[in-house]
Amino acid sequence: MASFFRDPWALAAVGIAVPAVLMGKFLVTRFFTLPHSEPEPSPKRAVPGEEDEVFVLYQGKQSIAGPSGSLSIFCLKVETFLRVAKIPFSVKGALAFQGPKGKLPFAKHGSTTTCDSHYMLEYLLNTFSKEGTSREHAESTRKGDAAGMLGDLALPGTMDARQLAVAKAIEVVIEHRLYYNGMMLRWGHDDGFAKITKIFFGAVPAIIKPFILRMVRRNVWDTMRAQGVATHHVSDVDRREIEDWDTVATLFETSGTPFLGGDAPCPQDCTLFAALDSLLNTPFPSKAKDHVIAKHPALVEYADAFRARFFPDVGPVDMAVRRESKLVMI
Image (cartoon, rainbow, N blue to C red; front, side, top):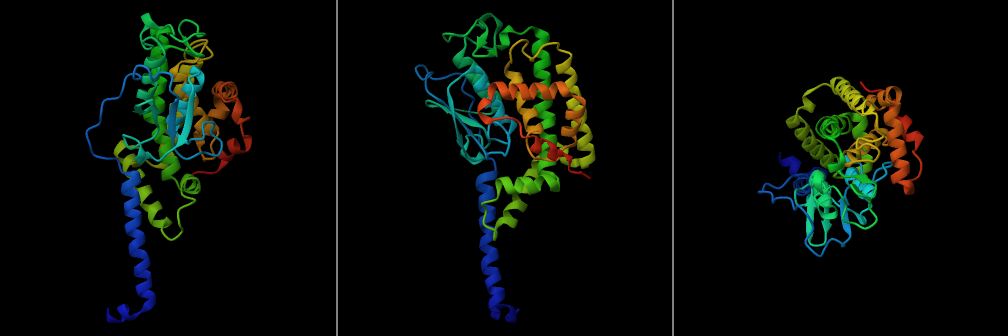
């Protein structure tokens, strides 16, 4: 032991490793750990007089091919809603710890801050339409919008009970099943995590990067284990993801309409498009991507047409990225 303390190389290694570990622990605790406090109720609508303020959407790291610039389907869902509803907005980058609930996306509209994509859409509907979630007040208050519409968005009140039930069922499958399956394959599988590392952690200094990656990945694993998906083998997750996409495709294809909202997209169409675009147009290996492309061309056509119509500024689909799904998964 005495010789250890006389060895300058050993002391140098300790001097580097200890601060690196402490810094890594601080960064993970600061940026990736949710605060433990009683949450505030979500605001329902804008403060009177602030309706004309620009809606500012805060989201995370830009992706390679996703139209919104975010790898999160929840961030993309909100931006898609804003584009379809023709609500003026701007996008700013942020980290999860900066949001009131420790996650992305969140938004600021005048003096009001909203977070969680579900409550953000509820806030937007209540602010920009007359009680947009109820049928008797389905007309828009904005000049130039047709009755029952908010921009190009069909308000929920214009949908019949079955349409609305199917749309919400698809949204639940996406947000509470497919999202976690995708999270497992991106963060839990080595192929996916290698790409995540390049996208999110490329700027982290090499000396502390291994510690940061280990702790961040462990945090994600804890989340997935608590949800349940991390208790399954990757082949089981693959199979379940394919089955869930088959369910979504059946519900969509048997609706007989171009959108879940009928002849125009509804809020749940924004969720469906976000999930499809995240599946098809990001460079992560996925058997579900191959399956959807091969077996459900209607979903692929829907996603590509939706992107071309509402995201004309991002250009055509990068087919090289789409073909990258052909990586072999164990």
